[in-house]
Amino acid sequence: MAFNRRNFITQLSGAFSIGAVVPYFDSLPGKKFLASLALQDQKTLSDSITDETFWYQVKMAYTVSPNIVNLNNGGVSPQPKPVQDAVERYNRLSNEAPSYYMWRTLNEGREGLREKLATLAGCSKDELAINRNSSEALETVIFGLRLKAGDEIVLTKQDYPNMINAWKQRAHRDGIVLKWLSFDFPIEDRQAIVKKFTEAFTPKTKVVHITHMINWNGQILPVREIAAAARKRGIEVLVDAAHTFAHLDYKIPDLDCDYFGTSLHKWLCAPFGSGLLYVKKEKIKGLYPLFAANDPESDDIRKFENLGTRSFAIEQAIGQAIDFHHMIGAERKEKRLQYLKNYWAERVTKLEGVEVHTSLDPAFGCAIGLLVVKGHQPQDVARYLHRNFQIHCVGINWENIHGVRITPNVYTTTKDLDRFINGVKTFVEESR
Image (tube, rainbow, N blue to C red; front, side):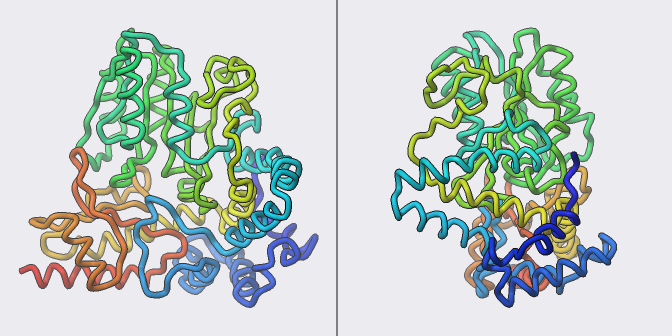
């Protein structure tokens, strides 16, 4: 059944006191947030995404620095106050009697959490394992697949370093063959991207590794189309969705992949060190777990959760992050993030020598953007912005990608971006 955001809000605020469950909503900022949220349902989506009063209330639900403008949400995002409070509450409970409350109470809550994640992801709960980050999820697949010497894997030089190194290690250990693609982004031609992947496929290709959104510059790849081409050839599909889950409005089955990994501490704003692994039901039995299980060939997704002792407080507080995500609304969130990227990008590109190497087309980009100031090293631009305007961002120098990554989030306001735009303008003027 499709998720109904309005019913969800009504249930939270009507059937019981939300403040009794999440104390933040009994605070003055929390009550203002709920009131502002209720007003949004009376507005069109286009009006809602540009309503700075509402997004200021969203910002007040976070505890972000009032002095530093954080435009590096691409690595990890802060948690809203309800999520932080939940982590602290569960952690205090755990410390009362760790083995009792962790293993007999919080551990039992994993199944309810799995149900919530399944609703968000649009798949069966028996296809989702909860872990710590994208790297762990994806390396579970990379090291768990039954590959032999000579088997080919198609991937790109623009993929995430941890995944590249994992595949290199597998090649070193087992003699598999890595077929490298390299792109000059941004690209706004789906068929050109698909064609480059399919031209690399051979009868020996067993897996295609697809990064849904390139973390360096925000380029979105046409996963479903690549997956369709792979399926015709019997090739398995692994998707690195570190930067698209709870960022773009989609469900995992929409991608038609076999395996999928993401970090929940990025765009879902869940606690630091929380992630998700998806394995299509019929693929679970044949995939070995990264950490040993009683039965490595079990068809139970839970065999991928044998992590030993970890923070159950972090794990359980994912539920509050899901609730907060639903309160804002997936479509509204994606449209707002797209609006923010285009807001700054359209303004800085009017400056002499400034380019944005990320598509402004929502089919090929969303929150993440890459700023390029011709004649200047990305690190120099990033250092200038931090030193003179207290703007935190990161310089990128990777395969065919060079610039400053700018990544706002839902708590970012246009006023914050105006400060950034002024910083770029000042840098350009002082550099003449």
